[in-house]
Image 1: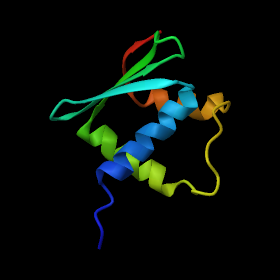
Image 2 (image 1 turned 120 degrees about the horizontal axis):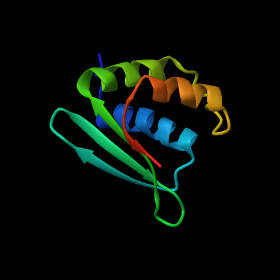
Image 3 (image 1 turned 180 degrees about the vertical axis):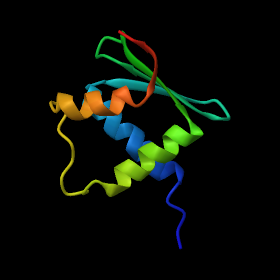
Length: 94
């Protein structure tokens, strides 16, 4: 059985959150016990910074895997984005 918690699955799940936030550029830092993810607008100004610890990444990947790949979440779906972001530790949002 293939491990569902690969870089591909983690980055796909994180990418969905970033797409929903409407960011244009990203920076991802591996902290050893999770990730710090920064999203920037088209001119390079910070829009959002998220800190994911290992349990939060586990939850995010599990949630992402349960979503239908044929029905991507629209960036304009504020309710979904708000739901996801409320469950994450915000380091800073601009």
